[in-house]
Picture 1 (cartoon, rainbow, N blue to C red):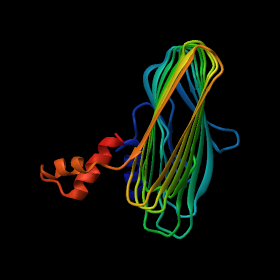
Picture 2: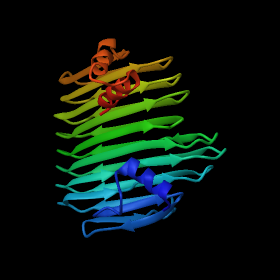
Picture 3: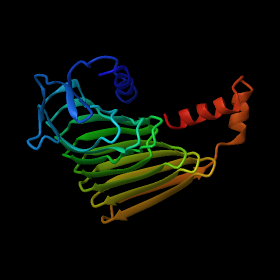
Picture 4: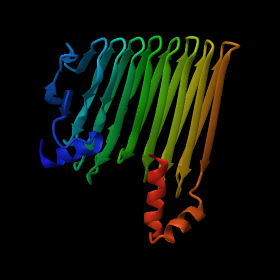
Length: 305
């Protein structure tokens, strides 16, 4: 990797060097580096378009990094990654994609991640999307995440689009079984004429299943965001969704809740709020020595944390 590609890797995965544990680093359509461990095996799919990750029963305190870097203008790819996580595991998976496009052709990464999480396992999943470059070509990302949680399992997702993506369509679908829990903290920042659409569809299918979804968005410039949160309660369950957004300049934000209860013991709650940054917040920070621009940046940073 050259210095630019290493810098992108730092943005999306906080890596200065090869990580400890299992990893697969994809660079412009090819595997740049890969390592499996005794408990986490990474193998190429037969079609060559992605990887399969197998995590053994009882694997704890281990991590798997699978970042993607694109620095060639015009490169487009669809990658399928499938995770098979055993029972009684406690693991962290760090993904993410960064695109630097300084050319005149669109660059695009569509990633489809499928998770099969075994009984009583805990998975922390971190995914960041980042774009940069002064070319006329767009930076496009369309991630799809599919999750199935077995009895007593937990998936804790921290997903974010931190800057520079022209257009994105983000899809998350989850099936939550008995006693399982899904946690999602999703953050999106758009600017200029960028567009972002996010759909989170969760089916609570087992007794004592739970989901807690927190969506945060900031739309600057003339950008547009469209967020749909769809929760179905098909058993004795608890579902909660919170969608908070900040609108700036000429931005547009649409937040659409959809709750479906198919069981008398399903408890489903949705909260949504869209507004501008309060003037007193900026004034207070300016009294501490910040400029108006710096104060605004600090407020956005804290909101999307």
